[in-house]
Amino acid sequence: MTKPVIADKKPAVLELEAGTYYWCTCGQSKNQPFCDGGHQGTEFTPQAFELTEKKKVALCQCKVTNNPPFCDGAHSKL
Image (cartoon, rainbow, N blue to C red; front, side, top):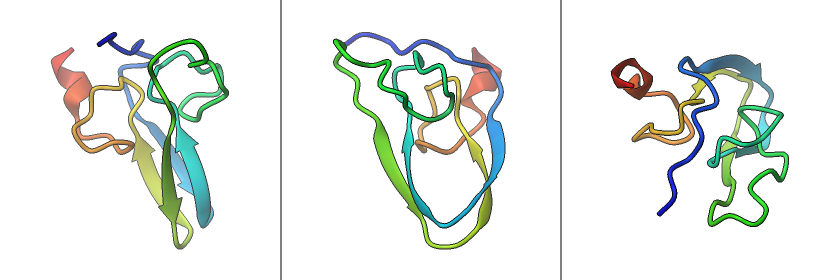
């Protein structure tokens, strides 16, 4: 399996409204941490996640989290 591109070595801390979002798994999106279709032609697909209420989140941008799409601190070991 191909490894994803590391988009950044720190999470994107955002306050998001309730709704469905698509997290970039390939690291190639120009709209990090969200998918913009940059994975086309690869084995990667975006990961959907839903928030039921407005919430502050830390979304992984290094793409090696063990709790996708959320940051688990894995970037500190890169």
